Amino acid sequence: MSSLLDGKTLAVIGDPIEHSLSPLIQQAMLDELGIPCTYGRIRVPAGTVGAWLPGAPGLNLAGFNATMPHKTDLVPLMDTLSDDAAMYHAVNTVVIRDGRFHGHNTDGGGFVRSLHDEGIRPKDLRIAVYGAGGAARSVVLKLAAEGAGQITVCCRTPARAEELARASSRVRVVAIGSEDFEKALSEAELFINCTPLGMQGVNSQFSSFDFLDRLPAGAPVCDLIYRPLKTELLKEAEKRGHHVMNGLGMLIHQAILALEQFASMPLDASLMMAAVQKKLVPELKKGL
Image (cartoon, rainbow, N blue to C red; front, side, top):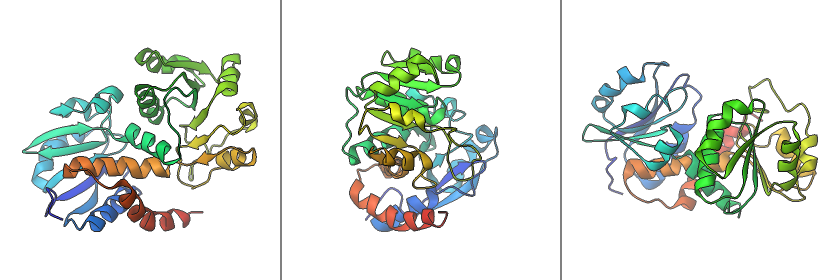
């Protein structure tokens, strides 16, 4: 397949970057498509992306993905910003064309696509989101833009998340453990964990899973974590009869959307998903 990417390189930048799965994911798709392009990792130390960026075109890069801590630092450095990147104030995909930098963010779109794969349509749904960090921001604002019903962001310090509530009339913020928190759970048609609680390598876990008992019977429970593939939260939710999903679908779909931007062409998502899962799932299972 002839492509704008022929003979070019792509990469992911971050600090740290050694454990990023982006090279495995993107290379699997490039190989499936028969595009002669390589994808690697570049460590760009925190706070230095502004100094690094002007030299990027000289590295034969057609573009790059960005992970922590560069997503917000890239925003003012872009020549253009997609609607989603502007909405989230974060960039995870940069396309380089004729020396100009075009910033995109595929996180929220990737999450919505992963919901669709599970037969979940967010429009008009009452949604409870646990956590208010960067992952929550992209998920919450995209769900609001997709026409979700009431989105309740549940966190320890509501004052720190009020910006989310100001960003959309569909969003409100409540304190974990409050009466409003209990009410939001009891009405939720979808529950999403956007915190690192239960993630492999993170020494923190939910102190109790009793809050799952407040959810309506059968309400889907989503965890954005994909290491491990089934967290304790998902195991406990499954025991209670809930449909569960991890963050693997979001991870892959955001990568598919990024590659569509790099190559400036639509991709067969089901074909790309299959190619990535063939390479990725065995790697993730090694850590189980």
